[in-house]
Amino acid sequence: MAKHSIAKDLAALWFQAPMVIAARTQAMAVAAMTGTAADYVETSRMVTEKMAAAAESVVAANVAVMKEGFDAAAGLAVGKIGPAAGHKRIAAAALRPYAKRVRANARRLTK
Image (cartoon, rainbow, N blue to C red; front, side):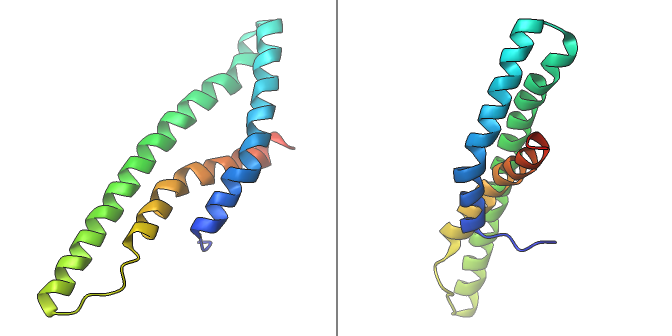
């Protein structure tokens, strides 16, 4: 599995998201003009991917919050508190589902 970082995920969102939006906007314009069912596939995919990414992001953020809480509780129990970098791990977990989809869509839509 590839190493993910918050910087890589933010870069994907910053640079690749506009390309994906432009490609999908063009697909929606074509769908509006032609009106065939095949042209609506990308619009439907866009909506379902957004809902799936939002759900996955919420779950990932909640899991990360729980993990940070358990780690903090364990640190208190043994008298050792680690570095306070939990907020970065939580943000990274929340961003990862969106960035993963943006990267995949950018590859797929620019072929």
